Structure formats: C-alpha cells, structure tokens
Length: 178
Image 1 (cartoon, rainbow, N blue to C red):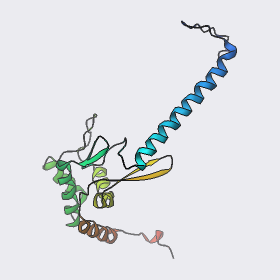
Image 2: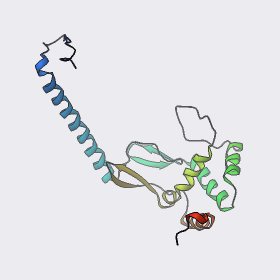
Image 3: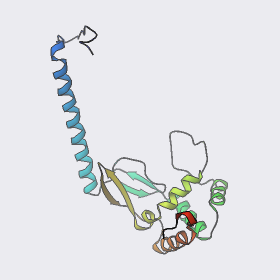
C-alpha cells in the first residue's frame, strides 16, 4: 500500500526504509502469532490443572481467583426454578414469579432491557447436568476441559428433571424417523 500510493512515512526515532516494510510486517505478524500461541498454551495448561479461566460464570456461580464458588443468593433461585419446573409451572409463570420476588439477575455492566428473559430461564434449565454434577466446561481451540465446581442441585432433582424433560418432548409427525 505504501509503495502503490507512493507514501512517505516519517518515524520519530528511526529512518523508515520502504524496502524493509514487508519484512518488518512479516516479523511483526510472526511475533503476534507466537504471542497468541503462548497465551493459548498457558490457558490450556491452567484448564488442564483444573483452574478457572476467563469467561462468563453461570448463574449461581462466581469466580474467586482460580476457583469458582457458589453465590448463594443466586443458587437459591436456581433450586427454586428447578422446583417450579418439576411442579410443571410454565416458563412464563416462573419468569413472573422471579420478577415478583425480585430475584437477582447475573451482574452486567449493561442494564437489561428484559428482566428475567425466558431465554435466561431456559439456559439455567439446559445446564441441569452441570448444576447437578458440579461441572464447568471450557473449550479452547477445539479442546474441551471440565473444571469441578460445587453442585447447586441434588442428583434426585436432576434425575426427576431429565424424566420430565423427556416426557415433555414432542416430535411432530414430519420429524419422526421410520
């Protein structure tokens, strides 16, 4: 681009040689690639050793250094959501009850447009296995790592949830495999 447009580049501390620009760009790209690879290796090493890493913590949990702990003020509501679900309370009614009881939502720097969105409740329910078995799954460069975290729901609740979830699944006629 510099050569095509016949641009002059002035540097404060050194002389700029247009002929060396492609070489410097290549060296700079190699260094960025090396840094990215070293960072990725460091993250993977931390995950392999069972240490928490970056990313959003699931509702009911909070990272404290390299450990993920339960946030009891949120965990209470995780348990309550599963209890209501097992009582066959609809998602919209669960949402209404959460809002009515002023249940805290996961902290965010951006104010929520929708208080207790249906998708937030669904994501809690979809994570039932993680809440029961005490697992936090990370993925990095196609590899998956599991970190142990404290369980929030008991195995009995999880097993009841799985049975109810399977019973609630509907398969339209045009999706049934013969």
